[in-house]
Image (tube, rainbow, N blue to C red; front, side, top):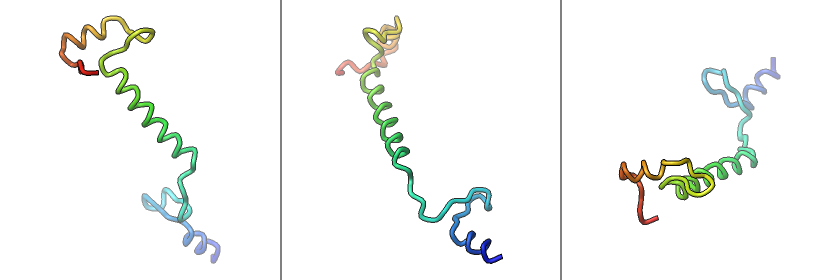
Length: 76
């Protein structure tokens, strides 16, 4: 019985006890790196391809359609 009480004291419980984790658990380093990388990758794609793909990654008439819809930023 005492082991169960000690075990519960060392755990944080969420969702009525369905999810349990050890107290003061830190986020793993690889997960922090992954979050940063995905955010950087998304921002890079947004900046470089906001006006449509060019060169090797060109998907045909996408640039022309974006210009016809007036959804491009000409200053980039």
